[in-house]
Image (tube, rainbow, N blue to C red; front, side, top):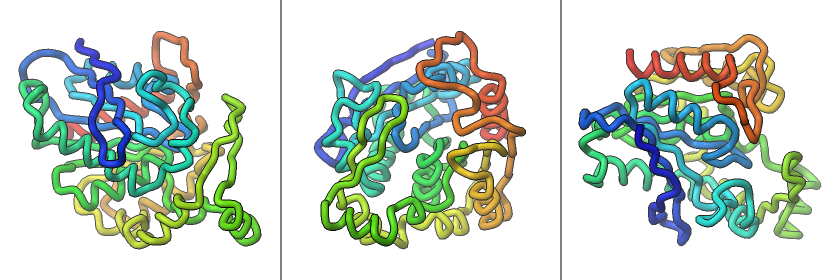
Length: 280
């Protein structure tokens, strides 16, 4: 298996996109799978490397990457050494980053012996689920889209009322990262960018208009993104497939770091279901 890690794609927003690819070097074009991490996430979180290996073993060309402003750096792509970049992240940048990755793999000749550029599929975890839903609706190159514990709405997650007014007045608000103990800053540009592009960033609109296969995977007991959000996605797109996992949590019973040599049973089920969906 080929694992090429931490190479750089030039993004549109003055920061590189740190990228990994996993594949079997058979010189046969394979379906491309692009994985998008979620809020306070990164490509090397927990068991994502094992997920990448599982897809590669199953005959896919698997790509995962850090959004350019996720808070990681080229030197330290794990965790969040660059909180200034994190503060300047927004949905426009994330969608542009994903487009950069799609355009790169479908136009560069570096991997075309092993990557089927006519068969691009997107997976998004958590907030990344919203990103891939929007991009799949607007990008003709995408064939199928899968959400893993994905969100159904971005706007509801912004501060409201007095908290929103404080954010506007102070320009920053902070969210504590329970694992790293960092105070993660959000600049008001994040909110302003959303409001300026509210229609584009409407996940209900994108999901309702999606004319390609959609698989919605969600843990019934997810404490972070309630299962009702998956049910809304399914309601908005009647042709979608809804796969609910009994019990489990937001990261399918994994954690960071993940020191096991195998996926958790729940993440194994999720990966297997996703592979079946793309292959069918």
